Length: 196
Image (cartoon, rainbow, N blue to C red):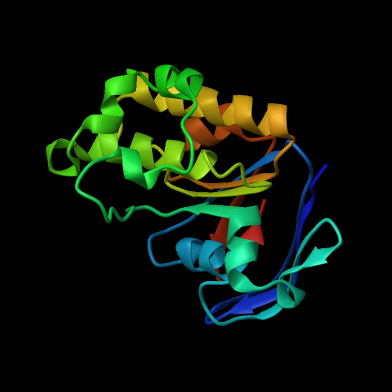
């Protein structure tokens, strides 16, 4: 069962940060715009320069090739990118149960990207990430563009995934009520530090 551990992690104006997210645990991080929340997730995903160490169990980020690390530690950015004209080719595999949990039918795989709303893109980006079965999840405002019903669908699917896979989850959210619903522990990123 994977544990995500940050040891003296520093990136630009944040850090040093020490944090352990246990298997199946969700930790929510809030904070003002510009405080470095997205930067923190990007450092954990090895997308931005940083110092310190990130561990997934005994596997260290520094000793793992970046492409492999990003398969293990899946980042859902605030805005996802789409390379193909239709939805289907973006997926490594599809899980019909997961599609239905987020309110989609199988034919969504044939939809053109251009016809998708921002909320549909956001839910499909989550499904795309989960199709790679990462051991840990880094979620940057996973439900920011969604209505209440779809927000609850996303929360329920992520809860299902983290419990079933025992995945540690670090979830950035500006919504204190959401943080209360989803997380076992909650922090604010303030002056470069995680504050309970």
